[in-house]
Length: 90
Image 1 (tube, rainbow, N blue to C red):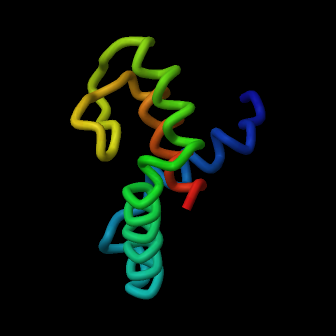
Image 2 (image 1 turned 60 degrees about the vertical axis):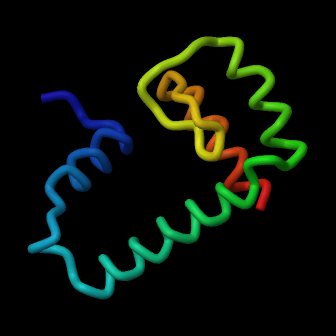
């Protein structure tokens, strides 16, 4: 059997998680981190950084993933790029 990469090992470990076998403190911390990221992303939607990325990705077409604060959907990697830029901008 071939050795798994670190990414494969992480994906396997994460895929086995469930709310029933994850400590409450870990779930609570994950929820807080997710809310923090969404809040920062929404606050960063119209920063210079996010506007610059927006100008590029909107030309690449639509898809199934939400572009936060834009009222449109983009391809998954394009939405991730835009939303992640907005999060990091704030």
